[in-house]
Image 1: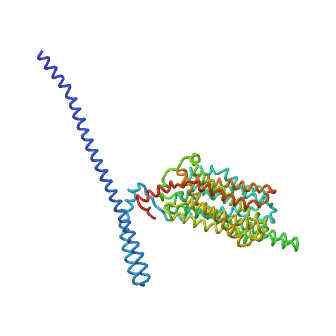
Image 2: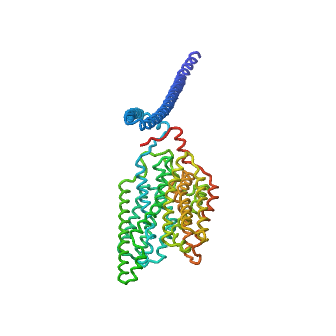
Image 3: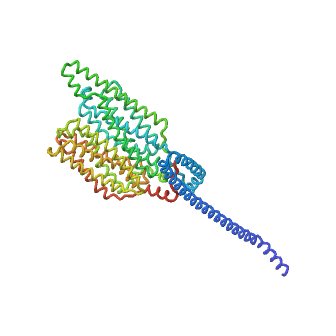
Length: 558
């Protein structure tokens, strides 16, 4: 029994040894993992301390850099007063300060990357990209309004009717509303460069058709359709370009410059068209003497129109070449944190909230009516017995004033970190409403009618409304974010074209006359004011950029 008991104990001890070894190994592994975790925690704490130390050092260096700049500026100002000797000493001090800044630059860049977790950089050639885009938009606007300033001469030379000229204005809103969503998908899925290349190619192709010596109805219709399809990029790509290339404090200015170029095209077309093609009145004067002189005058007009078309073709091909040579869709590094964030997928239209639609309607209604009103302003003034020459110059002054006020409004918004774009838009719409009321009273009451009054009423009304364009574009994009800028801008401009088409449709009913145009312009601006007041101003993109700026400092300037 004792022998069997001992053998049983030996068997149990032999069986328990592996278990004890497993327990020891598990305890050892737990202790090892705990020590590794503690080492990792210590490493993380050390890395965090290094990052905070680098951030503090970067802020200190940035503060020292600002102080050096202030000191240099003060020294330069004093040197201008002291003379050439002081300026020489200043130059050596500036060189020394520049050398110190160059030595600390890599550390500053590392701190920005470590703190912001994403490198942002602003490149100087963003202005070149914006310039090329503005050239494209300006040429599109000039080609679009090509026939308006020379309509009388073209009607006499080619036997065109008023319906043919009016068709140019009417097809624009219709084709825009029909094609805006496919163009939105194209810009989102391809790139900004592809959209601009296709648009510039459409403009060049339309100019080729327009410059062909055979002026048949089919070729004219084809040219009309091709040019209409090229206008999508003209109004919708400015916000996308500004978001991809410009930092937060320059974004609205870039949109304002792109919007200003839309008015520059028709303005240049008015100036060049009147000088390039002789007036129809000269043709009628020649017709009095003999039929031969009349035919000779018509031949001269045809030659002048042909040269004008060739010039348009050359400029369009040059702009297409510039885009093909160098026009990147985006820079190597983003200019802001918000430009790196992913935008919504193809169903972005479904994500537009009620707040965004308030901005869309508040802009689309007055802008669509005002644009169509400007296109047929000569027809409106004929009802009040105002000569065509005077109405043309009133329209030119309105376009010029619109460009200046657009740029001023955009730059004013960028001067503030959290601007009040809705309040500024409300003030401009009220100013436009009051101006249109004054203009309507002048037209209806001949005793009040003066040339200065006509100029002030129309110029202030159209310029104040047009100046809201970059503001509404940015308000809608900020409210709809993270929906893509191209989608939001396409919706805003499509709404504008819907109201523009409704305005132009009324012209197909001659019994309505034209006196209702002034009242429609006044009412559209007035109805937009309560919509803007109901709009809740939000800045979702700007909040990302402000948060990154406050935590990591300003972006590195190229």
